Image (cartoon, rainbow, N blue to C red; front, side):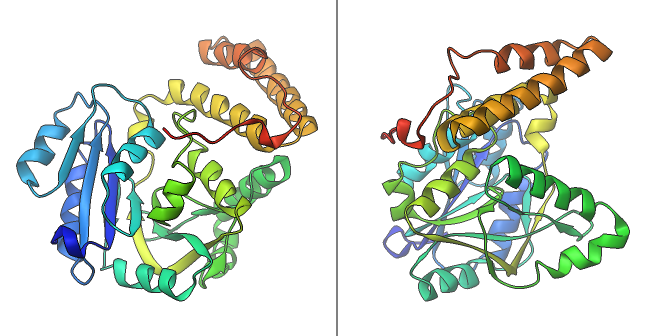
Length: 311
């Protein structure tokens, strides 16, 4: 931790019942970061597992912000960003672990490339294998391409060829929010994450808005971070299935043309109607009701219908 007057990077973590992972994450930050002045801000989204108290006890220099209710990942990061004093924001999931001092190369890249707004890092699984952390622009074609690449990567005979694609710095459409380095001034200019996304697609939306303003997004393999993956989400998986589709519908409503919005609904309607007929599952029925809820998620004709507003 450093003197506020010298702060360059504000590291923000949003914690929700992360007692099993967040202390290890914070410990790795303190152990690895030495060269660049930084601060750590943890926004606790009304955890009930005692993790906030553990953070307060074990890391007294961490700025802990405790929320009365869980308002979601994006809202939590927005709250942290409002308190941040650094020139850059480093948004990290609580289930990440640093294995080296990652700040110098990230800051250097930002300083070298004045047109870059966001940098995503290389993510590793617990066994040090590559975790795909770059995605194509969200669209029917883009989502298909990303899913296809993931399926190919899960085949051992194709894994090496795909890993080679991510061994050099490259421009990306979307970088995963588990490790997200962004200029604070840009984050503020965009009013941060759109809090309509409770979970999922919020980083894709932010990446799209950054690119819409003419900024580039980089992926760098020069920085590696271990990401255990899906810790909080796994605890409420059925609810998150519904939330995923809710966010997907909203994203298409916000960014994609009307024909794609209709095509997505037709595909989802067919997919979950067949699933509901095969076996009774309340989650499938909830998703079907969501797909048919045109009052809350109408088809829109223009991308510009959503006005960015301060949170």
